[in-house]
Image (cartoon, rainbow, N blue to C red; front, side, top):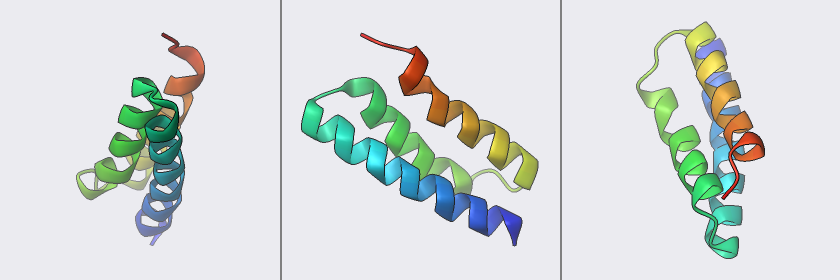
Length: 65
């Protein structure tokens, strides 16, 4: 149940990052958004989902072009 909720939460943030990256022509938020929407399908563990999702959420804040 936790994996499903976390997947939906990170997918929603991923959609936001994707739309922002697409409109601003920013590759880092765009790629992060795509990864946030896709990775929950491949990670079965809730803790791993949380850690990977938190890292992907932080990437656009720390990696700037």
